[in-house]
Image 1 (cartoon, rainbow, N blue to C red):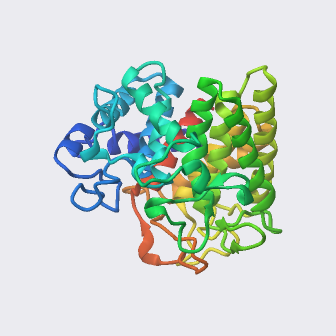
Image 2: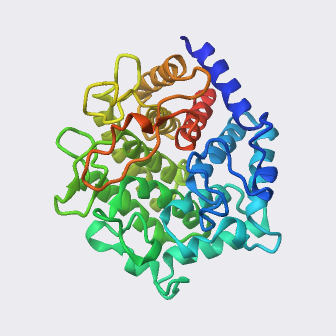
Length: 395
């Protein structure tokens, strides 16, 4: 399948899943207490009110749609995103507790949607009010959250490059490993966008240092990155494609607010991100399959339980093309990304977006090859695919 055919096929799929859908209507879903079709954990109010609709499952889908708007200027995508955010943020600039929960009460993942709010900073005063609170919760050394914890002290580890624990709901780290690649993406792009906007140079320095620490301390001899770590060689020794993808996307997204700026701090961030993304890309490209995709466990052969996986492959498309666009990477990285996008469209986009691995824990066991966990149209795959599409149409 060539790139023109792939773009057409992908565009139709994305529109039917979102802006043209009669099912995934944000106002209807939230007011009726339902869930988006791509949210396979079915985060209904009755089951998980603290995460209802305010989670990265939805954040990646809607940020991808906003990326399409930025790429082609079609207001339909922007309006759809705003119809979602307006259901989560009241006109008084407060998150709607009974619908969305509040980031102050739980963990890192929900900051993904906060990064989407950043895209409207300066345009919507009610969003700015929320952003200020969310940023304070993460960075203010004097602020105690609703559980009585100072997040920037209790959950921000010097031994992990000042990176935050992956989760802190209940005041405890995950069962085995504190720092996950997933958590880099959930937190750092949000912090980078907001810190750049308000001129918080101290936080910007920390963000660059966090990216650099992961680059230098979580890469294995095979060129890939461990899913999770406690530092000092205590690693989760699996190379899960989506975890790798989260980190690659984090690098590109952290760099974006600083690209093209002439001040020394911005140049420093770009230098760190460029070096990190090039190192990442060179490691992952050694494992690209002939069809353009990557396996769920990237260093192992393709099998019925270790399939060529959609979400992580889409993430590679996104971070490679965005890296080239922002000047972080050489143009030679474009062709493998285009090949990967066409590979998804040819092999996995058939009556839905297939073989998205549902979830896996960084607990030291191989829970990355459960055939029942390969789903269709799951948000953690649909969202990155939409993001990848946005970079393809920019190209």
